[in-house]
Image (cartoon, rainbow, N blue to C red; front, side, top):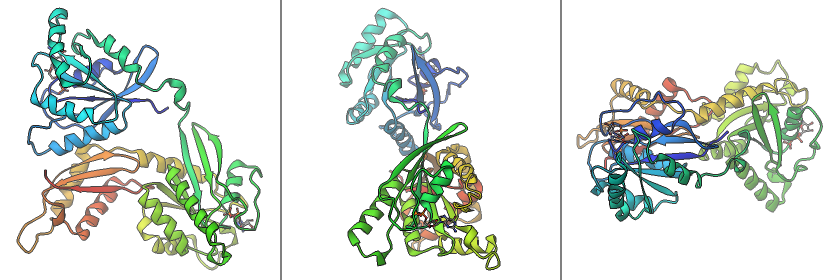
Length: 438
Ligand code: GDP
Ligand code: GDP
């Protein structure tokens, strides 16, 4: 179940980790005593009264300091905020409002997310109210005096907080995995859907474009619920009707956008066509996980090629999608159709996977040792300071460098290959963002 997310934001050392530990169900997490240390975003389950949610600590959000990792910290906090239903902005009540608090407040007021202001380290009730009152000036509404260490005041804060969270009946019971079945007309999309369902529910016809509208079918298998999105496919040029063709491509593109995982269905007899390549391009642009499904394998003369040879031919044309799994099926006989679900589960997992910052940087360090970044004619060399995964779906890694312009495409591809080799991410595209220092 996708629980609402609450982002905990604030300068280093104001007591964010302490508060997270108090809110979270499992109390084992460690309070870091080094101020300003960058951390990965960690999601921890929490609850208050009958409401479940997740808290994510964002590392210190610093605006007025010029440490090397500042952009990183900020990026992490921003990424956390985009997925959050609400945020708790933590400040240090013993210190009073600082310039940094004001800067963060200015920024927070411009965001869409409701913000609660928690004035931490207010152990004494009377003094606490006075300390908290100083923070009205931040313009974020009522300051809540709390003590993360003692737990005082957090009840009122949480009562207010849960009013901002979507109620449980607004959340889907089980998370659905959206699987779009994409491909040219007649490759066997409807047949595949029928094979999934094990019954002739959608009408299969040899005439292309019969299934005109996108049909969603929900199936449950084991732990998972899959929403299968079928499209009518893209009409062949020779079918003239240009308007309808345009509409179909559009629909295929829309189905790609809705997908967690795209099944790119290829007709084994025709092989990979230009339209298939166009669809593959789109899948990558949208950052969707994908599986290449070669259908009608029963119709291929087994003497013509082995699966291995055929796979090579497909991958030669879809080389830019080499991360995708490829499976040979027959929707007609049902052969291997079930196995598609295993690949879907794997791809979804990889699409959502988060990798520790330490691992990212280990890969980078190794990569740079083997092959140092290019040096320009002026003798200026590219430097990679630090990398971290800033989001998933698809996995996105930001690299902080001295100047992105110093890294040519060759080098960028080399780094991406290293991530693929060392971390994997099969089934999903990955994105690398090259950010300069500033
Ligand atoms: P973070 O950097 O914002 O995550 O801050 P931490 O949770 O690591 O706390 C920073 C320091 O403030 C630690 O030394 C904590 O013991 C202290 N601290 C945290 N919460 C409270 C509190 O409610 N009262 C007091 N007096 N100190 C606190
Ligand atoms: P769609 O337009 O992509 O939905 O394709 P359909 O599912 O309507 O199938 C188009 C044609 O291909 C029909 O005549 C199907 O019987 C045939 N077909 C589909 N799957 C297979 C398969 O696995 N093997 C063979 N030999 N024919 C298939």
